[in-house]
Image 1 (cartoon, rainbow, N blue to C red):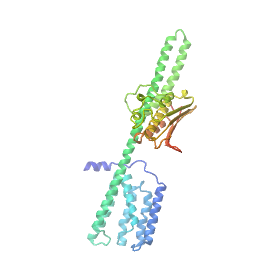
Image 2: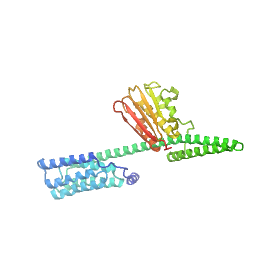
Image 3: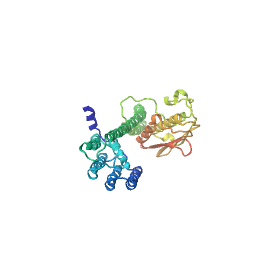
Image 4: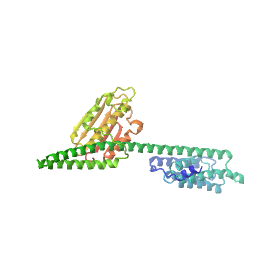
Length: 394
């Protein structure tokens, strides 16, 4: 019993609550109109002025419910607690049911201490209203209303707790997807650095072999070693920033832009597990067209590998999710400063990736190299993935 209580007290607020937006202002406007209309035109409302003032306290509280959940609950339920002392009756406006949004926001966006304090205040308000009848006070509520109030509030608390847990679970899954993509990128960069180091070792051996007979050849070898070392150090810095694990790296050769042609018609044994497991598809799937434009040979290895991985993931997603697709087009345009990737299909449905996190990993990989990756439905039919990576990021 004490352990869950300590855990709740240690609970912090969820990060980055949504800012007030048009939807919040619209909600507040609708609540204001409902309160004014009911208080002004519904017959039999006692002490309209006080009842209206209590109901109007809810409207601005709706705008601050996520940023100050406990304060808003204290203001509104405190006003509802004090009002019967002057009017002798409980507020009876149906539009006052918007206070349920404050109870929801308390559990959804408050810290553990705020949740305990706010829930205690709400439940105390209901309990005191029920016990008022014992002392002969006219503003008491009946046992049925007390039970209904507890049931409704606990239901609201449960829904808010479920939403809070689901949001945390999704955030954790997003973090795992990003970390997985960081590990994959680090492995690719490891292969690139290993390539540069191998070239340096070979040049050093050649320079040593010819140093006595051809000093100029040894100097040329040193220049090549210097250039390779600069590239290797730059890519090593990127790898250190992205590496999030200690598992051995895959030493298979890193794919290049020239390997994109293999996406057009690969044999079944070269397909990824995701593509090979596609139900009802041939091993080749929809035909893939690959177009390379510009100086693709001058693109750094790390950037070329990232473009290949993004294209591979996009094609895999299109084969998995684009229903009735007849073609997939992969276009890569390389310039002196950037490499642009565009993958389109003419199918139906969004190619979001397995589990909904394929695009998360793609955006993470592009961002780690200083670029951007975006995906969405095409203007006509199908799905489009675009990515832009700077060639100097590696």
